[in-house]
Image (cartoon, rainbow, N blue to C red; front, side, top):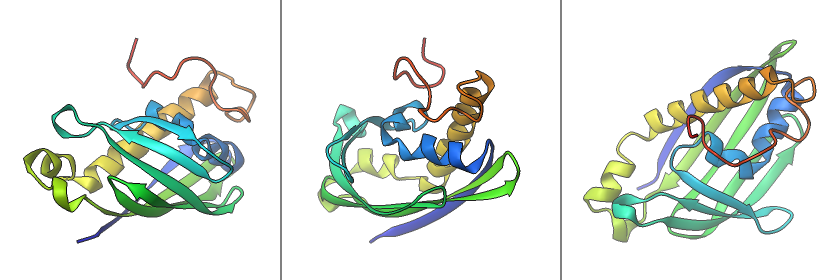
Length: 166
């Protein structure tokens, strides 16, 4: 059975800078706790690795299905351990403030619905809320560091550590 979740958060930063930071999927391990890596494999394709239950990674490939610069990014998994699709929209609230809305539809793998997988997908709404809050901290932290004015056009520089890692 597929689940659908959606949530929003307002981020301090202009819509273009917030969009560019999110559009670089390789940034995701910085603010998505369960995502270990995202590797761009083509113009609109990527490979994802997520920390799974009992130390087993879950992997899948995804295709970006729609890109509307500074407005919307949509995607769908194409193969792998998780079937998912979704979109993130970006809306200027005020000058220098952007509403980010993430909507996800996913199916946990049927063969992995044991106790470990059940815990992983136990609170998807809470996981999305946490990821959005971490994105806000990450984006606003990038802005505060003066990475080129409005969060910088290239996103943060340096290592790929998650927030709080040393």
